Length: 428
Image 1 (cartoon, helix red, strand yellow):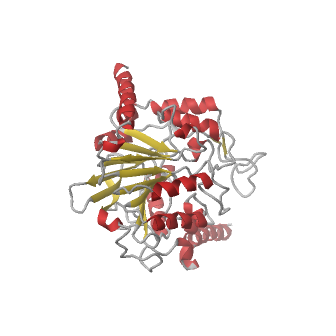
Image 2 (cartoon, one colour):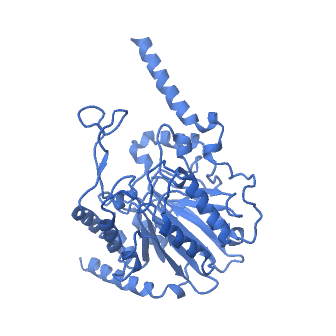
Image 3 (tube, one colour):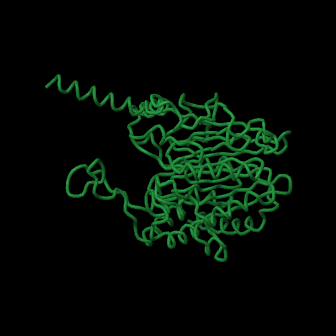
């Protein structure tokens, strides 16, 4: 108990010191993650602490604050299926949200991290308060305060006075600065499939000023939902996932803003989907835009099946077309996705010439499962070896694939179900 108290006190002191020392803090190790159920075991903090990050970035679903109801196909209240008439998720009270945040904040491994690293973050839907919720959610103001308390945000912070939790940080001396921009993809987001706004007018204005502001060697944009990948374009109509790709006009606006700003060294980090992957888009900003997705710290897609059957998830991940996914020798599995608990790790070698970035998704033991080594010279706005709109390997959007390729997962699933029904008819 005394060690835990000491860790809490040390974490508070460290956050204050780092908050006032951003401009001089040479940053070379960053960790990030998402999707941490406060009620589940969280052994992955051991690997994160061993990586010894100077900064840790929460990318949302930092707790699971809403209440998940069971799958009910039949009865008066049906939460799933074509006859669904009741919500699968419902919000919890503010007192219950606070209790869950307190549980998450006092996980021993996370306490050790807070004692030695600066912790920053944004939210996604489950810590916002309700699955897939956007600007219509009534408890967003209260839950914003709860998130900022969890992150130890100072009481006089502008984040406590604005509508939304978006913010930015700059670390390092001139010439070696790292800018971290954290977006809020919930507070102002229009309904899914509306192709409306993700960020809202005020946040778009702020983001434009951030990108057109003083230069930095590296700019990391944290989005709770994926920016580059749009797997819903190939998993539908079976199921759909949230992403910027569900709002194509907004994503185009984001890419154009980055391109017009001529800002060097921009890449994205994201969470949400319960698996890890690295994607890139070559035809938006004059240089490749990467999106490193780490999800989740506890929640992972393979955990829905018993261990002997998890190869099915890996096969389906490989079979589902993805035009943006980076596939190289660093991938543990053929699909170049990882569906078990994971975190993201960024290492910056400032002594290399040119500066080198090693960005990885790592497993519960801290071992890499996919990764890229990027020379900072590849991410230069002035070095436009790839022209926006030029046909490159990672330039074809998922929705532009031939229909037979785009929908092959649905074709496979429906074919299997049809064969099963046919065999049952034969047997009967």
